[in-house]
Amino acid sequence: MPARTLFEKIWNAHVVADLGGGMELLHVDRHYLVDLGGARALGEIAGGDFRVRNPELTFATADHLVSTEPGRKGGRDAGTNATLETFRRETHAIGIRLFDVNDEGQGIVHVVGPEQGLTLPGALIVCADSHTCTNGALGAVAFGMGSSELKHVLATQTIVQRRPKTMRVRFNGPVGIGVDAKDMILALIGQVGAAAGTGHAVEYVGEAVSALSPEGRMTLCNLSIEFGARIGFVAPDNKVFDYLRGRPFAPKGEQWNEAMAQWRDLQSDEGASFDAEVTVDCGAIAPQVTWGVSPEHVIAVDGCVPDPATQSNPERRLAWEKALDYMGLSAGQRIAGTHVDRVFIGSCTNSRLPDLRSAATVARGRRVAPHVRAWVVPGSQSVKRDAEAEGLHRIFLEAGFEWREPGCSMCLSANGDVVEPGARCVSTSNRNFVGRQGPNARTHLASPAMAAAAAIAGEIIDVRALLR
Image (tube, rainbow, N blue to C red; front, side, top):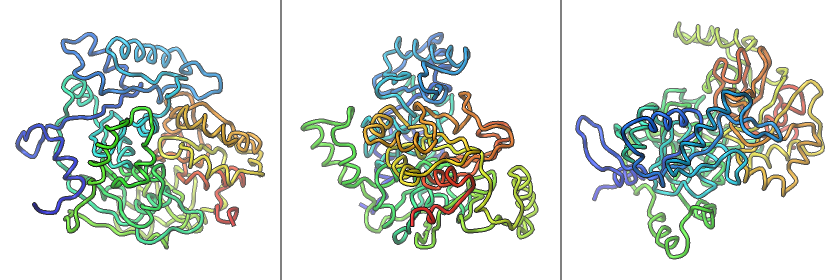
C-alpha cells in the first residue's frame, strides 16, 4: 500500500459513496449546532417533511447570541431571547443535547466540543461555523459548512464534499519568549497570504507544534480558515490522549483502550506526499499584531506599518490604502505606541485556561490604563470555573479588567458586545474585518499576553518588555 497522509486515512474512512465528478458522500461523526442559524434551521425542520436522522450525534450550544454580562439569563434583547427560546424548544423536541445558557457545559462551540470529549481523534466533525477547523487540534478532520448543508446533515448524517488537496506546514525550531500559537499562525498567514491555503487540508508539524499544549494547537488550527484552508489539524499524540482521558463524552474503560489502539496509528506515513509544503522559521517570529483589515495585514510588534507604495499590484496597493485609512494609521509609523481604547481577551481562538493564564501572568500586580476598558470572557463554564479555582479572576479584577460570562461576545458583535465606532481594540479573536467588532471599530489581532500588555500600557506594546 502506498504511503498515505493522515488526512487521507481519516477522509477515506468516512467515504460512504463516490458520487463522481470529484464529489464524495461522507459520514458525519459529530455535528455541532450553534444558536446563530441553528435555531432557524431547526424551526424549518419542525415545519418540514423529514426528521433528524441521528439526533444523538448532534450537540448544540448557546454561544453566539448570549449576553456575557455577569448575572445574564439569556440574550441582551427580545429578539435574541426569542431565538434562544426557539433553539431550546426545538432541540428538546428532537432530542438533541443542548448546553444551554448557564448550564455546566455551556460555552463557545469550539471550546465545548474538545473539553467535553466530543471531539475525538480520527473523527469527522462539521458545524455551520467557519472556525470548526479548531477541532482538528485533536487529530480530527473538522470543517465549517453552509445552511443548506446543515439541513442535509440533520436529515441524513452525511455531507457531500469535494476532496481537498493536502498541505503540510512545518514550524521549524522552538519559539522565543513572548511568542505563542497565535503568533505562529499569524506569522504564517503574513508569510503566505490569506488565500494560500484555499482548497487544501493542512497538517501542522514541527518542533514548535509538538511543544504546544492541545489548547495551543486549537489556536493554531482555529486560524486555518484565515489563510483559506477549511481544514487544519495536528496528528494526535500523548498530550492529546492525556487531555481527553476522563472527559464527559470520551470513551471509558475497555472502549478507551480500544480507541487508544486506533488513535496511535493516526499519523501520516513516512514518505507520504503532500500537494504543497510550507516552512516557517520559528526563531524569526516575534510577537505579532495586525495593522489592517485582514489577518494577513500583520507585522512584528517591533516593526513599522507597511507603505502601500511598495506594492506593484494596483489592487493590492489600493486595498492597503483603504485599510490604513479605515484603521487611522500612517505608512511607516511604528505599530508599538499606537493608542488603544478597548481590549478583548476571549473568542474560540483564545479563551481557554492556558490563554487566561498567559494573560494573567502579564496582568498580575499591574493596573489597566485609566482610559482603557478591558474584558476577559472565558470560553466556557468549565474554563470559568477552573480559572476561578486558580484565582485568575481575582488577578484580572484587581488589575481593572472586567470578568464576564462565557460566550462569543465581542468577537462578532452579534450579541450587544461591541466596540464603539472609531475606537481601537486589541483583540485575541480571529478576524479584524471592517465592522467585525462593531460599525467602524478598529481591531488589532494579537495573543492573550500581547492583549493584556496593551491593556496595561494603554497602547500597543511589546509584551517581551514586561515578561523580562
